[in-house]
Image 1: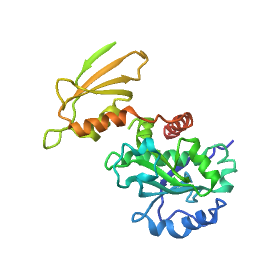
Image 2: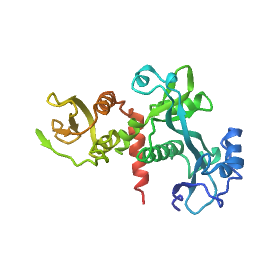
Image 3: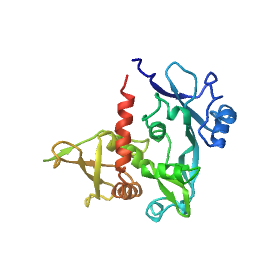
Image 4: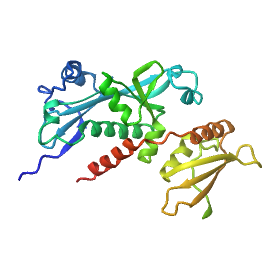
Length: 176
Length: 104
């Protein structure tokens, strides 16, 4: 039996094939195909999940710097922070190709979790050279919000789909 | 087991240690829980009683950090005193991710 190709996560570059990507959310597909490359480095940094030896993108996330208004944070977090907006590592978009997720190569691989953990390691690395209060994300729907909540992300006040995970929790987790 | 240790911390040009440097050092040491107090003998001296994750769970390491500003010390005490631990799903995900990173 042939072993399935290994999965890699790497920065998006020109040779990656994004043409067949379909995650079931047209706006996430559209972003990858139309904007991810042109925004790269200046607005967002996109990381793609591929099978070793293949340029076909099977999943991706895009990250950029952002901020959270302190008044929108729960009281327990707010009382230790300054009154002005605090910097975040913003997980702008994250998606996995639906067909690959259910394929023999992708099934059971927890691809979304893999992308999320990869993003958290990048956030922890970035926090060694710049101030970052949290990783934050605006979930595209309630299912996506549930995904992030399972890993400890908490909602901003009155914004149940805008969630954050304090960077200190990430650093504790990763020992960085 | 209680031991007294001295750690090397990078000081800035004014001879102070930054909050980020103290936090970095603590994380590098794998410390998982802390209590922080001021040294009653000096308002600019911070004492960290840090519980180290070791097989001998009772192991306690005490570290004294000098030259930290009072403002930073208070802020550090607040931050360390109120740390949100990762939830079980996140811890399990981190273990799976570490295994994935080591697969080669």
